[in-house]
Length: 473
Image (tube, rainbow, N blue to C red; front, side, top):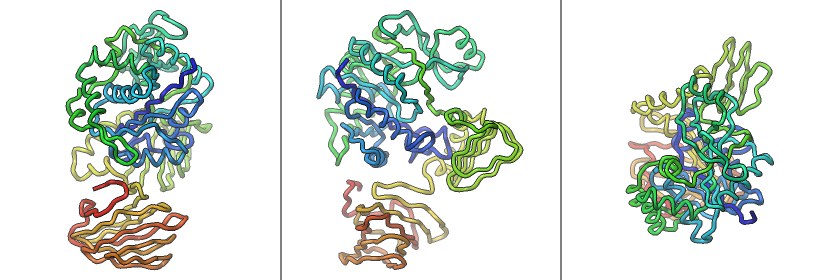
């Protein structure tokens, strides 16, 4: 097959099973967990092979600048970045991408990729892509099934039926995530593969089946595209259309009902990294079975993992332990029981005092750079701001706080009530309450400064944006 495959990268998930590193404001697909770059960047790199055209990316509107920045960092120019106003699962997302693809090419073939999986992009992987693409061009909707290597309770399974073409088989049935005993039976029986969540399909075939089997989803996708608006380099899908759409996966909406479904059993290394023990398995452990991501020391420890964002973690005299240390929260638990993190996150979310720990990190990222909370108290807050070269914050003012800026590194261009001045290292400026101000980095290195806020209210919603190059209000 010579036609280029359109990669469709789904990057809108807000999963927190890898808490405390993964949080709703910066979930796991944008984190560096295994290999070089974030999982999202690794997904884009796999789709730079000669078999592929430019990617279509679907993501949550809140992640638009992370997506654009991480794509730019690795030199990838997407065909489109489509912004989902609400989470509505994979059936709708794929339908939206298919509609966008057929607008350019009625015979487009899509490779649907989760952005948070770890995959070995070997020759075997790309051969599987070619095989699946040929089947999709022949009007098959192809699911990639991973040959299991162990009894796994964290994945759904597909029962493989009779062969129907080169490398592909009928799907006998989908099997929900089993308990350990059932998983062992499925492994021993053979003929069952893990459901990877990757699909290859003709855009037109998928749309025809979606209109026939899930008409509400098809109508919502059509309306979301027709009412979409262009916003900078993004396509904002219509919110009302998304609200009207069923929240349903492509497995339930299409694959379990269609007579065009097929499965391609494959053997290349794959993991959905759905828990910390899965991250451990994706690394090469030392002789004692230990994995360290960040600074760690193991003493008389076996089959354990440390992930640390800054702190030097020492673990002594234990086995089967996961220590995940972010800057403001630490998880310690049995590595083999790490799939229970999701229920812990639900408990944290339910308590107003700890809800924020599931939503944002101490370091918050913005299209211009970001900031880290250093210290806060009654009527004051200290932050470290970093501004990327050539970027600038919005022209803004505050009703309830004043600010002091001290430049630590780089050069800052500061506008206060229309007056512009340049600040260098060790220079500072006072921004009185109510003044109109803006910070920019005209230099070639990152601008870093310390911001001290004082006032009666210090919330992020006390920002009145007058002008913003990123289209924020």
